[in-house]
Amino acid sequence: MPKIFKFGGALLSKASNVSHMYRLVEKHKNQPLVIIVSAIGKTTNNLEKLYHISQTKNQEALRKSFFKIKKQHFNLVETLKVRNEDIIISKLEESFSHLYNKLSNNYDNYYEGYDQIISFGEKFSGIIIYHFLQNKQLPVKFIDACEIIHTDNKFTNATVKWKETESLIKQKVSTSLNNGQIILTQGFIASNGKGFITTLGREGSDFSAAIIAYSLNAREVCIWKDVPGLMNADPRIFPDAIKIPHISYNEAIELAFYGASVIHPKTIQPLKKKNIILKVCPFFQPDCTPTLINSSENDDTEIPKIILKERQTLLSISSKNLEFITEENFLRVFETINSHRVHINLMQNSAVSFSIIFNENIHKLNKILTDLNNDFILKYNQNLSLLTIRHYNDKIIKKYLNNKEVFLSQKNRTTIQILIK
Ligand code: ASP
Ligand code: MG
Image (cartoon, rainbow, N blue to C red):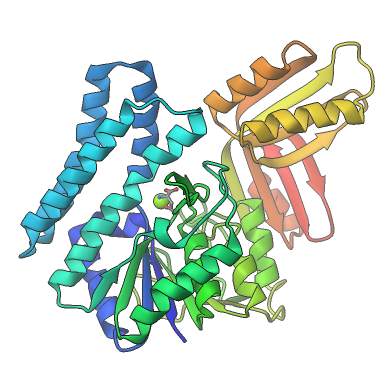
């Protein structure tokens, strides 16, 4: 039964870390292993900026932004100091020129174009990491994720065609694994099976790992992270965060749902279905015990978990004649929100208004405002934070609320959510 290793982009942005990754892989090379990599460093964000610049037709800014991304990748290759540097460089050159050409294409819509451009981050990292591992004499085989993960056409947040994908993965990955090869593929990207690239949602590489694990009936998925494991809060924001030794799939689904950025929300479900263990492993202390996620719910309420989602937008929608919000109006609002791929983090309604909270995105906000402006009164606040505490108590609420201005709050038996400034 194979193991799946997923390495996030933040880990792969430095040559020393890439070498460290090689050593981890090398330790496990005698068992069936699939490695999934995402785009290095902040490449996906940078590609997103590049795509937006390409729509302004500002050639000078476009070139500048393009070369910045190119330089980061070539710098990494240079510092890797490998014998096959020429091959990596020529493959990267080719891929970068594809990207440049695609920037001037006309796409059917914003989202289709977005995926065609944004997916290059994983293409670049795939090229670099594959050739790096090959140079180290590992029996590594590269398989393009677009050939094994097929989705519908919902660009930027595509839905997996499970049957088709499962059989593609079985066909293309199993045989090579049985032949003793280590498989390397990219996270996050897929294809609609008709020549167009789709993506699985931002930070979706964990989900790619789960799709592959599910299809191969893997034993476990290890997500390598630059933290000691799954933490009860983001240690960059809350220095007193502690490691969670073990939680259940269900608790992990809840945490991901509320925005714990450690695991992509869609990741757990396929693993749970087949009882595949998920481990969150400390990249820099590979011998320390990882966080274990499986079906046992015994430890779920032990440690309160704090999730802070920053840069939240609150949009309040009310009808112009101050009528009660009606089902018809709800339908209109949800259709608009869905058409702009906005994920609602929290919602609340009163007699005359309906409020939604979502991740700040000016582009999407403007589109929603334009669409709803004629029929509704719209008010919004930006730069808010959504604090979620699971297994809360009064002391913890007080500690984290810390006299902040509260815009809205919602509470159930296990979870409290507070929108603060
Ligand atoms: N590179 C993609 C992103 O940054 C996917 C991932 O990192 O998981 O969203
Ligand atoms: Mg990433």
